[in-house]
Image 1 (tube, rainbow, N blue to C red):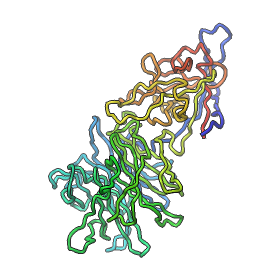
Image 2: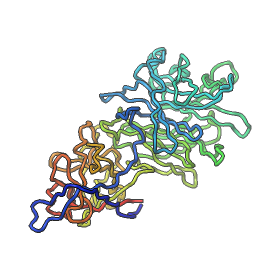
Image 3: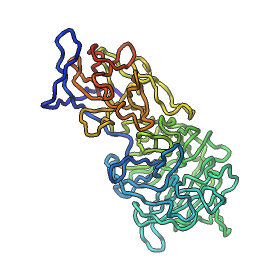
Image 4: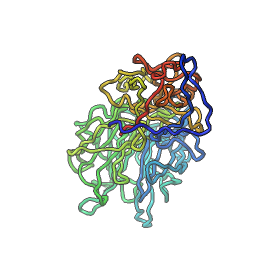
Length: 513
């Protein structure tokens, strides 16, 4: 990326005039100024009334010109799962989203636990009995009918936005699979449907924590196929086998690239969560038969999130590109139990391998900026790779300054968003790290740090009023929590001062492309 141009400062008319206090010379006239703000990640995080709404384990379905996004609704007030239902959103451009509401409540599923709407995925298919296009939502929950194991269920609807009705029993009981290592091996279903070169349609269901199981569905989409012809349901093996990728955890997602006509081609990919905290990874099938060959080639494609212990992806083609939707905890009070969906564009190398991605605050559609003081210092945060140790979270005290990350470009990139303290204040901004999404420039007692809004109470500490630069150039940022005190970058540190060193307290905000 390179710096392209300075963001245009849009001065508002008829504004109150303020002056830099304590100057020995004539003070510069300082006015409130509105600067451009960015949208970006997360994608959703709201309900029909615009209220803050958490939802994790995202999955997607493309129907014509519309993408549907499904999440499990996180309502927990503690560091534990409480997910009573699934929500749906829709979009035609990946930027403007419509809340479609609840599609399935777990209290309406006879065999499941009411607060355990774990990961699910929706598939579109023609009902062979009626010839009507139907929608099948595969999901998992704790199974009250199977010794408390996790099981895979399926619910059916005439619309991708529901409501969905469960078929009345699990499609795959946890006790059906063998060699279990836990009561939650049978979670996180993913679906893949395609017609082969021989004209035969195959409908695959894949799932698993620690192991990855796969089976083929019958044409009715609500029963498992007897592929051996022995009169018994046939469940596939652990498709990772002896060559399993290291540290496979959960969240499998089957994918294959499509040509301009929508026909699948090339390798089968298995995207998945790796290790703990969960990184994102991908494996490729060593062969062409999903039921009998193994996934063996793998690579890490995204580090563990800066704000969530888990992650779960959806990979899909839309608007002529391939996209990667995942979740993190970047909303206020966010964590692995209060998550939200985000998006990045996914790229392939010439050999079919998947390029590494960073989770970002801007996503594919937002504006990334640099902030440089008038004395020439560029704002950066200390370089770090997100820890795999739960005890290191949430991040509350990451150093900010200049010269902290000279070799890591992303550590000096920022997303200027609408101020968190007051969504209606055109002069309020919050400054989010581009590569540590959910971490903001934060006033913390007597210092300024990069921190998450871990308790939902940091909105004012993470909001600044924007003024014409105290030096007469650029823009200055006044703390909302400490009026009259400005962000100041000097001697390698970002602090709050009264602005007497006007150049150190005035910044050029420049876009990056």
